[in-house]
Amino acid sequence: MDLDRLSDEELVEKARAHPALASECLGVLYRRFYPKVAYWCLRVCGNRDEAADLAQEVFVRVHSRLGSFRGESRFSTWLYQVTRSVAINRGESNRRRSSPLTDLDSAPEMADPLPDAQEVLARAEAAGELRAAMEELEPLEAKVLYLHFANGLTLPRITELLGLDNRSGAKAYIVSATRKLRRRYGLVKEAARVAE
Amino acid sequence: MSLSDSLHSAWSPETGCPSPEDWLRLETGEAIPDERRRLEEHASRCPACNSEREMARLFAEAPEKDEDVDFIVARLEALELPKQPIPLAFPGRRHSLVWAARLAALIVLALAVGLFFRAAQAPPLPDPGAGEVRRGGHLRPIGPSGEISEMPREFRWEGVEGARSYRVTLRAVDDAVLWQETVTVSSARLPEDVARGLHPAVLYRWSVEALDERGARLAASEPVRFLVRP
Image 1 (cartoon, each protein chain N blue to C red):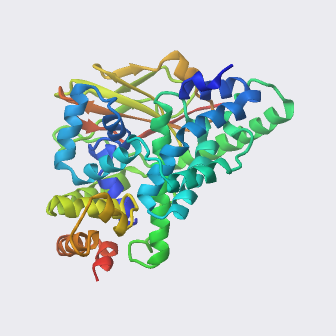
Image 2 (spheres, rainbow over the protein chains, first blue to last red):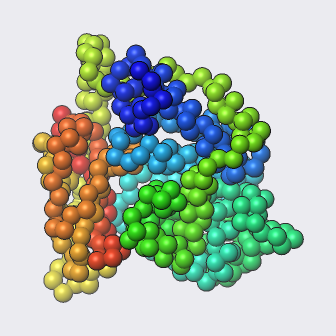
């Protein structure tokens, strides 16, 4: 059978139904997405070695978690979820390595990933405060801040991605954003450190 | 909690923002016109979602061929993955040792989760009494919840004033969406094929959102956990 003619989702189904063909089916499927994931990782990382490491990590994760793909969305959508999640975790750990101690980071992690009602409430209130503070920023400041801290992109990558042509690029926006946030929302010490 | 976690919590589907997958669907042209309008409008006033849209756009656009991309693809092609991902195999082939190990694991898991639920249930949260102020934007799920004796066939919740529809979502513990449906009443039947894919002694979570006539979120429940006793 010509596996190239099957859709992405059909390839997963076939791999499930015929374990002997799984390797071949998944090989065809993954190869379809290698350029897309490679390109995305390159745009996010900038450096091709780092991007190659990230892309490999993505496919290792995809392969190990393929059982959670139930076919309710397109395979490419699920792949994007995985890719984004791996990139964010990697960006976060890179940033933590470069600035290992912050007040926020030293807080104990939640033992239970499913928080109780009180915790949900506290988080919702904190989230509300943060949203309100971010709404006071210029749209571009907020966008740069989110791309850096939430999506894990480096400042040079953000400068390039958004086509910023000012002298210090994304850093200027992070500096002004964090000054405003520090005034309004004292807890954002991690962001404030970048501005100093 | 790190700033990254705080940002993700502040702008998430739980706080009314579209999901990253929604942005991908917009950028790949899969969103229907109404949804497209809603997403475009949201992105214009939400810088966080604007950033998420940027990330999705990068994934949606056709990759440019260049030597850096070729280099990464070559690295990927050289990647040695296990012959078959472990969870991909369906439990169709019976093997006594494998099944014995799975059964033992399920029993241990069931005991652990049973203890967890027992701890989590005490003391119960008080119900808001008549005349008390209710926090806006919340929706009260009815069931299924906690340990149950058989696979649920239906999800139920209290209706919300002004809601035109409800979107109910069932997730696995790793947050993967197993099923999602939008209905106009305050209950939804779980399709047979989805129910067949659920397993006893495995923890699942479901949640529901109330939507207005434009599909914007009016209220949302907290995730509810349930587990079918083995």
